[in-house]
Length: 481
RNA sequence: GGCGGCGUAGCUCAGCUGGUUAGAGCACAGGACUCAUAAGCCUGGGGUCACAAGUUCAAGUCUUGUCGCCGCUACCA
Image (cartoon, rainbow, N blue to C red; front, side, top):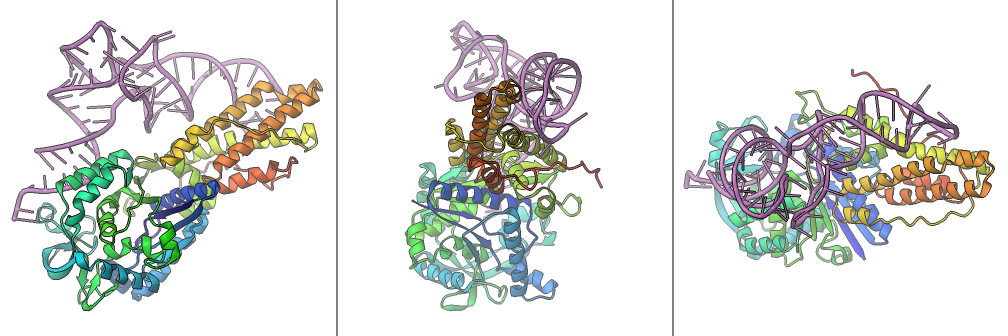
């Protein structure tokens, strides 16, 4: 079986933040789980680099847009590495391949593209047009970017999105395109029922130069959003490459809730226009706040992913954002809750279970475990959760096992058995503990890959191979700076 | 304005098609133990399930209304 999973590609106008990191991690879990099942897997991510906003920012910094993109794109690559997220592909929308293939898409869509005049209020910050009403409500100034909307009248190419409205709606309602969670599915279907307008998919070059040329029209470049969406197929080598033929449609596309419209309306429209199948699942995650507030420089509550990873490690980061941010909703980060989760769950419950087991094997069995029975606990709950992208619940179910193991140890009391010289019994109990830990490691692999690897290397061969450090060392809690 | 969701222990939440004394984790209190990262285990306190009315033998679970949050979308053009 082939498996294809994508993240949205971050726009390179800002630093990588917790939301990006979480999305990368979620997709990585799906990819690792798929590889674990034996599926041939492509996990792709990348960066979105065109558009007026980038050009503008580059100018501010006295860089070329390409130089700015290079620099920012690299930061996202670095973040992936720090997170121990391993995509198979990293596409940049400035890659020649993407540019050329996007033009092929354009040509293939020709029957659904027409030229028209567009009049509207435009915000360079959002790269989007806004309705008259909204503009009035905001007194002519975009609240997100604190700059006035510009009245724009221009010639654009339009994509006949309206023509696909019904089919998109039908696909989503029938779960041919499965939008997860259901609340998001409801939102998008109600939007689709209201009807989609055709969308503008180009910008005049004299206004925005930093983009992909529209084939056959020197005066227009592709609208950045239109072209960015195409990355999901250009990265596979649309139209001719074998990967494209083998891996499209994507099994899961992971996105944040702010861009549903693009991925559940416009993107399916483009795919239908191309005569391609729709992505099978669109998984929509929520937003992450910090200390219950939207992260912002002015509030001074910014926390960078690297900051957390440097102190606690990639697995702790992954753990928190997978389990303690609800998979189907918004979540919050605070050092306090993060550290509580780290200490109680990772260090005390899991780390210590590994530690005490290893210590007892060392102490009572001279480090030799012998035959390890196969643990055959029911993993149905876990599988189901994972299939539904409920990472939080999947980890809940793993932690039930971790707790169960600690309870088992306290029930059997191997140290007492050892004192009574019941050697066989000691060996049996400890082998069961090891067996449990190995299964826990297996379940944990997609989520906490290096933790899983450490547990495996410690126990797998039936002989304890000591680790250099404990799994999750505890730190003195720091007072707030 | 329209559509949708939410309001359950101090905190975060679970409670499927209505049915015994409403659950979990965290936090808090107490206890027994010692293999272990002073970790783990056991026990306990704590809830008029937002409010009101209704349907029903029976409602946290269904209906209606009220209040309070939130999301999507809109009046335009």
